[in-house]
Every structure is written in C-alpha cells, then in structure tokens.
Image 1: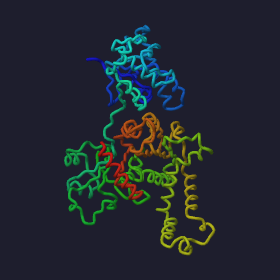
Image 2 (image 1 turned 45 degrees about the horizontal axis):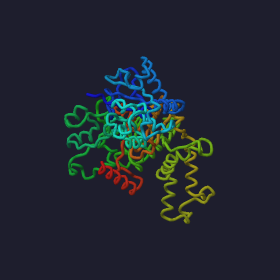
Image 3 (image 1 turned 120 degrees about the horizontal axis):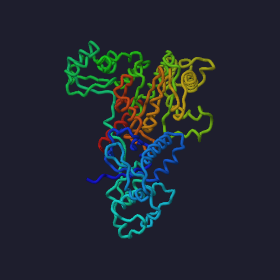
Image 4 (image 1 turned 120 degrees about the vertical axis):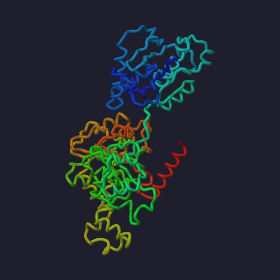
Length: 530
C-alpha cells in the first residue's frame, strides 16, 4: 500500500505545531486526518513564512518559533545530498510510528514547464508549486523545466494532498488539479454541563424530599444513562405531568428542587445549595444552574455558553459586583476577547480605548440597578405610570433629582466600576495572574486553541474565572467551531471538580421575545442544513 503524501501549509503548523514530533512519541488526539503513517512534506516557502512570523510577540510568533525549533531538531539528525533533498529520496523517519517528514526546496527552473509562475513574494503560489513538484517527482516527470507541455497539461495531481485551512489557497490549489483537505481535531458533541432526563417517579420524589441520590441508586434506576461528569447538572422530570402536584412550579418551587449537581467527591447527586444566595430572582433552569456554579466557592472556573440574550454576561457581572462587596474578591477584571478590537487606532488612554469593549458589562450594571435597586426601579415604574411631567409623584424636588434618570444611572455605574471593576486588553491578560480576584473572559469563542490554553492558565490563588461565549457567533478569521478556543477549553476542563459548565438553550433567552424567536429559528435552520 502506497504511503499517503501530505504537503503542509503554514497555517497548519502555526495552529497545530504538534504535527511535527518533538521526540516523545506524542500523537494528536482525534485528528481529522491521520498522519501517523504518512509522508509529510514541508515546503521551504513555509519555512520562510515561519521565519517571518517568529519575531512577533504573539501566539503566532510563539508557535512559529516552536515549529522551527522542532523542524531543525529533525533535519539535523543526518546529512543528505542535494539530489536526495530535491527528489524526496531521504525523508526523516520520526518516532511517531511509520511517519516520514521531508523539507522540500523548489527547483528554480520548475515553473518553466507551467503556465503558472508565481512571484517570490507569493507564498501561497510557492506552496502550490511545491505541491506540484511532489506530484511530478512521484510520477517521474522532470522538474528541471524540460518536461513537455503535453505532460504538464494532462497531469492531474491525484496522489498527494495539500493540507490547508486557508480557503483562498485551497481554491487556487484546486484550480490546478491539487487535492486539498482541512486539518483539525474531531471533537465530540459539545459538552453542555447539563442533561435533562425523564426519571422514575420514586427516584424523583426521593430526590425532591431528601435532596440527594447516590451514584449506586442512580445507576440502578437509570442503567442506560452515560457516566456522570463532575459538576454536571441533572434536570429531572417525570414522564406524566399528572404525577406532579397541582401547585408544583419548576421555576420557583423550593429553589429549583428538581435539579441536582453531581458531587464527584461524595459520589452523590446533590440538590442546588447556593441558588438562594444569588442576588436576583432566577427565571429558568439555565439561570439556576449558572447561579449555582457562580456561587459555589469550590468551583474555580465557570464556562457559560448559549445564545445572545440568555444572561451570560449579565449574571457574571451581578455576581462579580456582589462578590466584591462581600469581600470574596478584591476586584473584577474584565478581559474582552473580541478579535475585532484595534486599540492602537483609537484615541485616548487605555481606559478610553477599552471603553467600547466593556460596554456590555456596564450595560449589565445599569440594567441590574434598574431591575433590582429599589430607588431606580420605583422611579422607572412611576415614569411608566404617570409620565415625566408628574414630578411630585415621581421625583423629589432637589437639584440632584432634576437630572435625567439616565444621567444618574451613568453616575452610579461609573462609581461601581471605579470601585470594583477594571479592564485590560487580552494581550495584557496573557501575562497576568488573577489571584484574589474574579476574571471575566467575554466573547471567548473568538480565541484560537493556543490563545485559550494560555488564558485558562491565568487563574491565581483564591481567584475565579468566568468564560462566556456563543459558539454560533464566531467573528475571528480562520476560526470555526472545530478550532475555537471555547470548544478547546470546554474539552480540557471537563470532568474537573473545580470546574462547572453551563449551556443556555434558545428557550431560555430572556432579553426579548423577538431575540428568543430569532435564536430558535437559527437553531432550526442549522438543523435543516445539517
């Protein structure tokens, strides 16, 4: 059986540097393309691009330096003649099974046989040329420019594959008869941190009355259920609505007493113990689960995903505000993870540059004050009822109260922000240690795997991190649901007693009925197209 040959693009090595083995025999977990028995070819154009990136003070620069270090370690093992290098006759045998690796320069005269002649600065074109060279070599077509045009015109490169996640390069390569394929990792269905199950009546009422179920009793009653995961939330329901008492209310009955959390230490599903401490009234199962995860002092990291309008940022902000007032943390650091931020182009100091990025947090504080603080809530209700001109009913007659409610809310939000909150660019967060404070990573879906790996390691002594995001709203280039740092973080932190994960459904959107309708239609549309 002929060994498969793959030519590797630069972005693959930057995002998945472990493709180049470092000598420890490590194999990537669940790759979309099995390279363990392949011949991997790295064009020198890719080496040039990596050398260009290596000076960057970024994750890409770090990955480029590591890739170059690994490649050098391989090529220094033995000496080859130039003829062997040009003709792929002396590949490097790696420790990863039956894998081979070659670094391939392009013959200067090769493109004379082609109507396609990219410039030296066209890196994508040079990578395409390298792929064609490999095809010519294995088909015994001369690469020195002497090949007959008919040989080139009839040649289709079916024996090799270009691995690239760059859509533009893939299109150009396909136009020249080159097979292309994406590379990444196959992740299972995203872990949601919760499961909704129909349970036997006796099990439901035992939990409702006593507040716990042992793993043994659970497995006997629910033998077909998959194994429980640390801090997984179990939403229990009965098959027949008639089995519930007439006054049973899932939303408010005994603080969501139909939901349990799997305590991995005790090997027991326990009732929610902290939801009653949360400073706002909870409106659905998702919010109850999120509140329990936030308020539990033994949980050091919370990952919250779900559609826009479900309360991810709002509840994290409210929790942070009250936790600081209660002395749990010295402050809250907000790290906007939106990839579109271009701070250098904005006027002002760092706080002024960052202000647009943290408006979702400030907006959450404003909404909290309107909904929960008696003074503002009463005035808003009064304005709705009597209008702005009925001052005796709606406001006191002093100079402070003559200002608009919007202006006074802004003053209050600014005061809270200055006392407890701060914000830093994501680049600065990578060098931080969040000890004794709460860190909120907002819009985390736009992070790459390497960025996410760095950020989740920022947790410090007696600190806590909250990661929020929506995997359906990725805005960063070259990132999709399979390569998003949000999916990576969820996978890496799953089944840890120190981590809880929460996923809101489209039915739990609370911002506005229109937003909930849009979220449902988007989900239904995706289900149809897949």
